[in-house]
Amino acid sequence: MRYRASVPDPDRRSPVKRQAILDAAMAAFLEHGYARVSVDTIAAAAGVGKQTVYSHFGDKEQLFLAVVAAAREERESVDALPRLDGNPRVALATAVRAILDIVLAPRIAALHRLTIAELPHHPELQRMWRDDTDRPSTDTVVADYLRDCDRAGVLAVPDPELAARQLSFLAVSEGRVATLQGTQPLPDGERERIALQVADLIVRAHRP
Image (cartoon, rainbow, N blue to C red; front, side, top):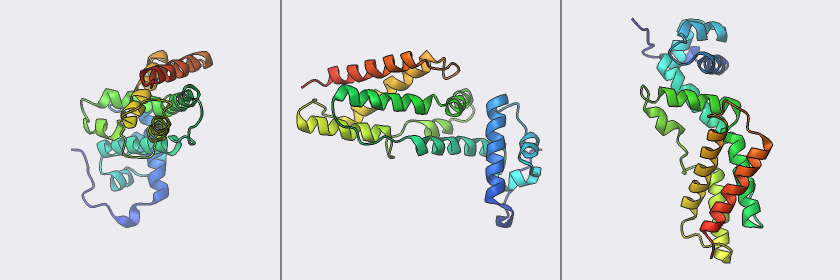
């Protein structure tokens, strides 16, 4: 029978131990997949007892969800751009390069692949991992820039948020296809090609 801590003891929930468990779990899940990793393995790698893992996270499933949430926070911590200005093609290409750097970072790309594999068993992952628009992100910066372009008459962008999401989706899709879902490195020349082509497509779609 699987053990699950019913009421975690706050005194046992050390932030240091929690982070050690998260780090060990992320490494184990990425190397072996969700199904082949046991709580015993994670506890040993983290240098804690099995019950300490349960007291912090409840069970392996909740630990896995916590790992995904931590990766999402890691992504958000770098998911930012300086304010864009100047020529639309140049500015938007800069945004695309930043998006590619974020989503193709090795650990984030690997966890995304693992998330996709686990979606049938953990559908809530879709809500946790999706590219939502209710937080500061590259999409927000791009939308603000496109809104400024619309006001200045440089581009005609009736829905800047939609156009920003479209730019992100194009960049992410092209990047993941070009790298076999992040399993292969993206050559600089390919990165530049994607950045320029996506930027050009958005600009041509919103000519005044």
